[in-house]
Amino acid sequence: MGFSYQLIAYLFFIKNSQKYLPISQTRFDLIFSSLNIDLKTSHNSSWENYQEFVGIIKQFQNYLKTKFSGIELLDAHSFLWIYGFQFEKSKENTEVRIQSKKTAEKKKPELPNYQPRKTIDLETLVEPETEIDYIKQLEKQMEIGNLAEEIVLKSEIEFLRTDYPDLAEKVRSVANNPKLGFDIISFEIDGTQKQIEVKAISTNKSNKSFFLSRNEFRKSKEYPNYYLYCVSELSSEKPKILRIKQPNFENENDFKMEPMTYKITFE
Image (cartoon, rainbow, N blue to C red; front, side, top):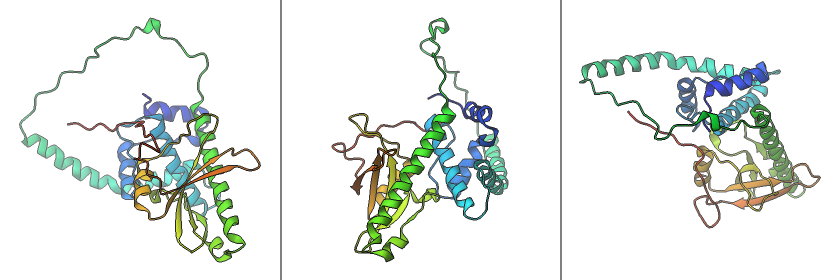
């Protein structure tokens, strides 16, 4: 989708000033890179990308809540923002070197401005009958994701508690550490650790789907005992959990992967 981060941030501002999360793409890319978080915000101003950005901030909020009380989403954002100031000096030195190099090089001819092949007739555009509340939509998705994680965490503990109480005590959520690329640490009955990624899915359609970040995809191939837990019917008394061990997302017979955004780089 062709959203700009300024528009998305403005939507947050008019909805609730406590959830106004502006993005400085350059700074947050440096921050995430220093923390081994695989998310790029520069040149990727899609709604899905912004959802992942807010999700990471929320994970830091959950972590800070374990240390301090009354931590809001904006507090976690400010924490990372202040942390990013350490990169300013490095950035300034880099920009000076780049500028010196460009001055020394022969000036390249400028490319002509891009002209669209087809103009858009503004008179024929149809306005939507109702506006989409993207902020409410994002909040709902985050609530559903948290609920799915709670259901899986409880299920894993209850499964081990009777016969393997020592293992049950070690089961925990690691969702507040985004660089890990999964949500819950649990165990097989022989004590082997399980790395569980939790996804809430809908069963209203014949095909099930969910979003997977680039970091989550990479980690699914690295961990030795990785599981995908798909949770459905979350609002029922007995939610359903589909457990898939070591899923190969690149196997077209089992999964269909579709790119949602593209990173374009050019000089």
